[in-house]
Length: 367
Image 1 (cartoon, rainbow, N blue to C red):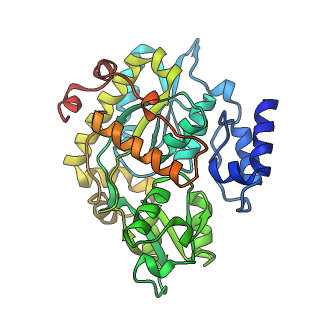
Image 2 (cartoon, rainbow, N blue to C red):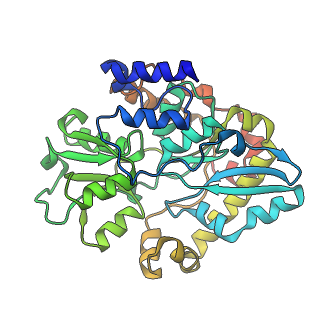
């Protein structure tokens, strides 16, 4: 732990590594506070922390009451949220003495901090958090991917903003979670208009803090995902300047630690079997899905149905094309100077034979 603290002290005092690291080697949740304290953005009381600080008590354990597996709670209203609400995974695993704990996080980077600390077992993030995690030395394993779903992520501007295109935000403050899909799509959107990331003022804020900053007019734009987009528009605080529909060229990833994969391949297989069922159910039962999730989101059913219309459905297998694309993402972040070294993403992927053991057959057929 002392060595990790020294690494973070060096990170705070070095302009080169400070620019390049999202979170420090080891992903200790205690050290996350250190990272925020030396960020260019002042910490606020609204930031949502990873839900565990006692990692030894929250690791997957075999106790007298059985094994406990911690899975991320979906805030993006995906079928992962349906899986939790329907309770089908718990019913499937109950005979095995396995219990599920659903844990909530502000965004992908915070999930992977917890994953590496042992307080989360299955994460669901966009393409960029795993790259930053690998760059920091985390033994991460990519398990499955999803369709692109770019329409669910938008660049918002204040309702009364004169901006009509992203070029109008040159020199302006844009808030986003660092190493998130918002960060990635901001780079893509700027490049499409012949601009660079340095042409805007990047304001690194997790979603809860960015929500406050945007509502108070402290930033000029906010790259964020659902349900924040719909909520902000309904409150007439902001409007969509653009979305990632034509920009996004990657899917999300489900991931775990190398240790958890090695010890629990059969449990991972069961998780994906039940999740794929939730994906298909969600696709074919839009109204029921909206009714199921309305209490969670505090959005009405018609609004949720409209929002779910932005989504694509069904898991996708890991293929050579997926791996190559993820390598492009890693190379892009290195070229931006935001990770300290080149990352070989293949170190986090399994062999085709290993994927065949944990991936439902109907998902493998989508290759």
